[in-house]
Image (cartoon, rainbow, N blue to C red; front, side):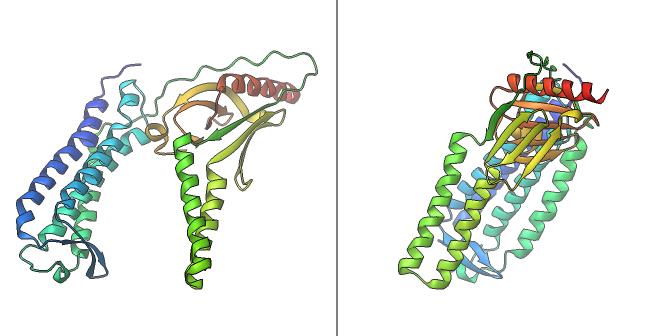
Length: 332
């Protein structure tokens, strides 16, 4: 699938070149004034007063990481999909977000140094709120321009090939069970975060303040609940259709067999196609996207797609196509 609409070049200019240029300009300005600011400089404000301080050399480093690397990663995330000829809302939106984020960080980081020029003590720094408002306004303008300079995207993606219904003996009941879960590194990081919260709660109950212990305990419970609800989903296909349920059984989504028009295995890119991971909703599709890679794509009779990332989507699609065929036959 090829196209000459200029989407790839403009997405690259908006989502990669613009953040790189803004980051370079911001770092250049910071290095130019770094000798005129106190050491340490204020890096965090509470209300109108600074309450966090660090070496001035940290500001250019943070600008590169948060105002350069992160926006460029976001902006570049969909370029491969665009190059393949895919089009869609998210593929146009991500470069615009990248440009806006780079603008926000450039204005905020440079402005936070400029307001401290000539001060002997960073504690005397004025409020950073005006700089923040300038940054937000500039980010919205640049992000909007980044959206507008890209060509209009009409939804276009690689077509998934419909699966053939699984062959079965007459009267045979077919069930397929799988899981949609985060990648092992992401899952390990979340579990580690929950464990840290639990250890902190126990420590506060043993030797800390009771009020803090209640707060930390509540945080640990909330994190454990969210981890159980949104990191692992159980996927089941049976004669009733497709059911996706979170491990904590709080979230449950169904596609009845009779509502299945097409079931197909496919490949997804979570960031490029859905703007992230978890339960996602984009124009034309809803997804349980726990990672990039193989997935089951279901097109419902109304045309909307439901996508869930699973291992062995080929078998899952064949089973779902079979039960959908039975359900359609029963309706005739």
